[in-house]
Amino acid sequence: MQNKKRVSNRLISNFLNTWKGISSPFSGKRLELSPYLHEDELPSLREKIQACLDSKGGQVSARARAAELGKAYIGLNDEGKEKYLILLAEEFGVDHDQIRQSAESLFADLGSTERWNAEQQLRKQLTPPYLTLLTQFNALPKGLKFLVDLRADLLKLKNKHPSLAPIESELRDQLSSWFDIGFLDLKRIDWNAPASLLERLIAYEAVHRVQSWIDLHHRLADNRRCFAFFHPRMPDEPLIFVWVALVEELSDNVNTLLDTSQSENIGDNDHTAIFYSISSTQQGLLGISLGDFLIKRVTDELRRELPQLNVFSTLSPIPGFSEWLMRTIADDADSVITPQNRESINALSDQSIEQLLETPEWIDEEPLATAMREILIPLAARYIMNEKRNNTRALDSVAHFHLSNGALVKQINWRADTSERGIAQSYSMMVNYLYDLDQIEKNHEQYFEHGSIARSKNVDALYTASD
Image 1 (cartoon, rainbow, N blue to C red):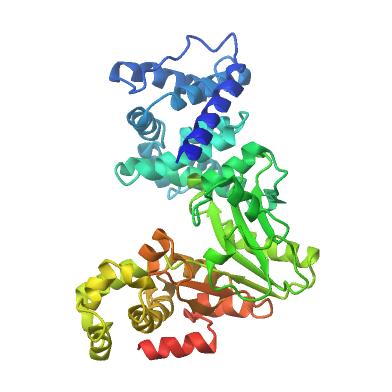
Image 2: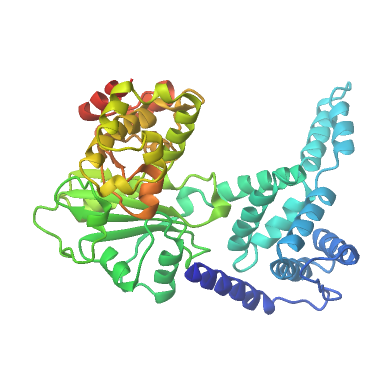
């Protein structure tokens, strides 16, 4: 948490220092706002936004006003930012009355030239004025990062304020084009990277928290890889990054992969690449697909560098399993727990299965753990394979991500992640999603067209047993 706060504070400082020198003699009175953005300050903010949109004083002055408006936004607290965004969305959006009039005129008896002019006018009216300001922000140094963070704020607020949904949608569309995969650079990050970048990896890691600099060094050793996508205009910010372990065979335990006492040298028999963590760093890019391209690009890079690699797999969490299981038990326990399950546990414990799931200290207690394993692994297979969103998409977000990329469900692993988080999410279980390069396209099409999930024979047997 401290690392993330330090990175955030540094970013704010960089914004302010970068924009400090952008000024114009025509920019007018300086905009000064209190953190809460009081009501009596809204007129001056409104006036400054309008002047920026009108390009009064020319483009140089408009650019200076955009920088001033950006600095003012950064200086606000959450309440102030909320007021700022509502003002922008509600007072500088499209004029619906004008649009209605122009749309009606299209149905009039017009000649081709007049109709074309009416269509052009309507197209212009459908472009909200705030989009001009967003474009001016983008033209500023570090403006792209500013807009990514601005969308993150909009995502938090749009459910509370529906009027913010249009500006969030417009910004998402703009970011989707600005962050097209063709504009991104794939880079390997190693121990020689700048300390500020390494610190970002620690702050942004979302799956398996980096415990120390020793831990980080191990994750960047010779038999490990870290790859990230960067945007040329955000060269210090990894957008999404993946950790890879180079090992002899399919890994079934993330604790072993992260064990800093393990060898850090590439072995002659290391033929398997394990993707064991993928982290998106920018909340403002939510819904803009980067991860699927990342895995495919990294796989290509690894094959070029290390031709001996012939197995590409993940070791992935099952983040929604325990929540789904507890909810399903509450709705209909008999649908997931059989009388035989209860008999096996009653012979070993004075607690019910439901009670044990609430307090899973039994994970390391044999033979109770083995009995619970026989119950939970088939249920995990059922959850991954059978529980769907919209009848076709895997309910589990991680499963959907890899299945949509063409992976198959290879193996469900017990005691694969015995961290507090791993036990809370899935009672220590993890999954190997295998990327069979000859089957990726077929698996992808089957999943998207029919909701069909590719799986190994072992997983298929578990899935069948859970029905």
